[in-house]
Length: 311
Image (cartoon, rainbow, N blue to C red; front, side, top):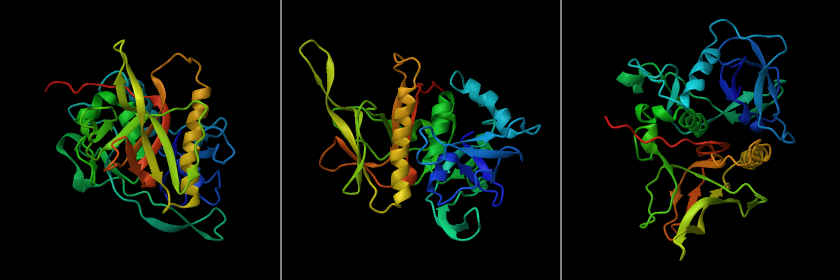
C-alpha cells in the first residue's frame, strides 16, 4: 500500500513522504480504507525500494474496506473505462492546491516537526454533476499522476483543476513533451521519460539537472529521425528543505533500482518518467524549469496513450 492514515491525527499519509519526517513510528498508522493497523516499511534513506505500508502477519482488512474494493477497479483501469452514468466509482483527486506547513509532533511527542498538511478530501464546492461526491482536493501531484497512469480510459471524463495550468480535465492538463516545429508549450503538467542508464544525478548550485528522452530531433539521410539535443529539466531546490531535495534524488534512485530489477528488459513500455509542473525557458526552448517540490513526481511505470473518443 502506498498510503495510510496517521492513527493520531487521522491524516492521509503517502509512504514516500515519510522520508520528510525527522522520526517515524512505523506502527503509528492504520489502513486508509479501514481501521486495521498497518506497518511502515522501507522508509529509511538506506533502503533501495520505495517506502510502502503493509499489513501485519495474519491480519486481514476489515469487511467493506474501501481500498480492497478499489483493487477490482485498478485491475480494469488499464483496459477500459470504469466510469458509469453516476460518475467515477470512488474518490479521485480533482483539484491541486498549494501546500501549507503546520507543526505536528514526532513519534515520542517530545518535539515539534514541520511536515506537509493533507487537505480536506471532500471539497463539495467543486463537485461536478457527473462526478458527484467523487472528487477530492490534494496538495501534491503524486495522487493525480497515479490516477492519470492507472485509469487512462477515463482521462477525458475526469475534471481536474490546477491553478495556473491550462486545461480542465485529466486529458488536457497533462502534456507529454515532444519536439514540434515552433518549440513552444503552454504551462502544463508535463511528463517525459528520462535516461536511467549509468547516469549520476546530484545537486549542483541548488539545481538538479535531469536530461529527458525527448527534444530536438534531426532527420538523417536515411530518413530516420534521431535525438540531436534532448530537453533538460532544471529543478531549482534553493528554497527547499534538505529532506525535500534528498527525496527527489531518492525518487530517481528508486526508479533506477526498479529499472535494474525489471524482469523483461525488452519491454519498451516500462520507463522511468518525470512528471512536473513547470515552465519553458524564454531563451532556450529545450530547457524547462521547475521549483515546486509538490509539483514533481518521478516513477517507473507504463504510461498508456489513449486518444480521446469522439463524442
